[in-house]
Length: 446
Image (cartoon, rainbow, N blue to C red; front, side, top):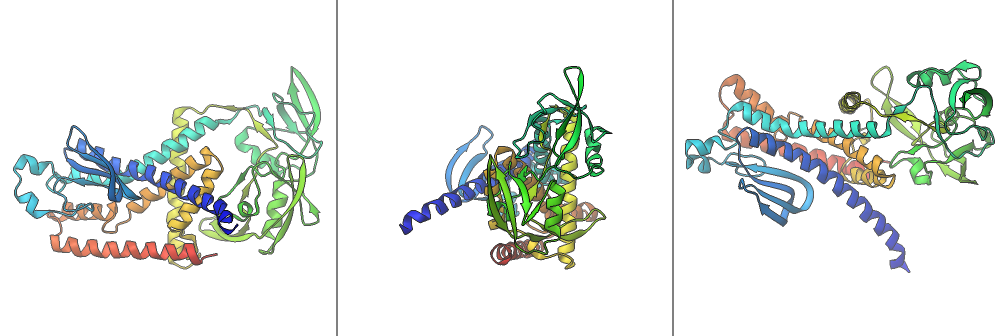
């Protein structure tokens, strides 16, 4: 019986590891392909393109003489260029001495400075491009709410209010107030009274009708954050929170307010799901979240997102608008990441906000469990983070190599081999220390 009891846990563990490996492999492949293809365009020959480290599982050589391989440890990858002593692009003086001028030009270390810098910068750049394209693709698939606001599908709700509304109804007014464009709909709803039932003026088949409907943003769970209190309590998208303790609630804002004032004490939620009502007890967690005025603030959260009681009809975003949206998402992630790092260094927020491989793996599995869109979105977020980290001016990382190239551009000569070895060793020690620190966070942080 004990062995049988381990099967579900093992299955969840395997699912988490599988999702983590897929996410990391996609991001690493794109990053290293950026180095490879830009290096090739710049006339630098790649000897090895490896996805993973350690024993080689499969390999083939293309017509350009590059060996493509998949290795057993899927925790990274590398491109080894001609003239490199190792996967970290260390110089091999002995190999360089025996080359003629034309062959030396095809090495990473004898190529023009601009070619080397472009090849190094291409890895993080491709990560950002991947993120922008993924965010843009998701935005194009999901679209934006059509104007006028039109019901595409009514979400299952426990209340009778809203049963007279139908897909295709255009919402003209709520509680006697004209409905604005969707980008201002949130502020519009804030001015409405919070009540279980409101009057909706709708246009249907050329007629205007006034019908009852629920508050626009009821206590409906549209999304559950991975590794959150809500996920651990078993809440799912589509759940409706009827009450917190003995207090009935009518809006998602009521739920948010109850969580904020909880002080982190356990909360019992009355949950409606597909016609059944049950109770769930969870404990809100104190989290450091971005503040509107900048910086961070501590707030109690349970990890759910809300939405309208209906799915609105959407229209497809244009490619340029979608790409602009994707770029804005990348800028926002980079900005919040740098702000979070700064506030961790200064002690303003907890260093537990830094996750290691275990935390990332768990989030990968949780994102995958919520569907393809959630998992793909997570890959894009993680790709942005990988691109940003690689630009840090730390030897071993791409940012460190770019610093060396900047030094060469200013002084006219590259750092000596001895200086490079010392700096690379120091950079490697720093990276390993940070990884160990993040791993301890995964194990010991609440």
